[in-house]
Length: 271
Image (cartoon, rainbow, N blue to C red):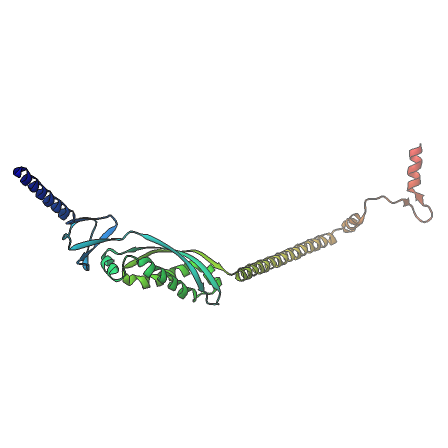
């Protein structure tokens, strides 16, 4: 009986030792996921060096590893800003960014894991307000690409020191007040009408010039014909035939003997 009791005690001790070794072993290694870096903390103090992807050894119960996402991330935000001519613009923008591997430790130490709402979103809003104030409302529409590039540069300048890189900045939408939209539409209509009037005037001028040119050509042609015929004995006959209407005279003869051609024609038909 006593031997059995000792046996169970030994088995229990061995089991506890094995369990302790297993826990110790599990806490001695960490796997950093793909696209992440491991921020090492020793007694909750952040170390400067970060761990790359893969399996790493750490001191059990002394060190802890926080995984920072270094993949491309996207944030979309909206808000309002004022243009140079004090028009209110409502915007929706999307930003692709990533955390630099080498900056993971300092970003976690100084900001934490919620860097998106703490740093990035406020920086986006501030950058948009600053750049929008340099353009009129109309320029925000016509120079959209330039506006987007300047906002991206301003945003990079603000969040770059934290080790965050802006990859892509997209203006999803710019909206203005109904009054401004109506004014833009009216301006475009006026410009189209003015362009049409200008085109019509140009067409009329061209047609007038064509008519003048045609008339000049016809006058020159007539002049040349007259000059040629005036030197010909048949000129008088030419003029007479040009003026004849194609109908034969109804009366022929001199003043002493007049013949009614219509009567003659009627008698001939009766016979």
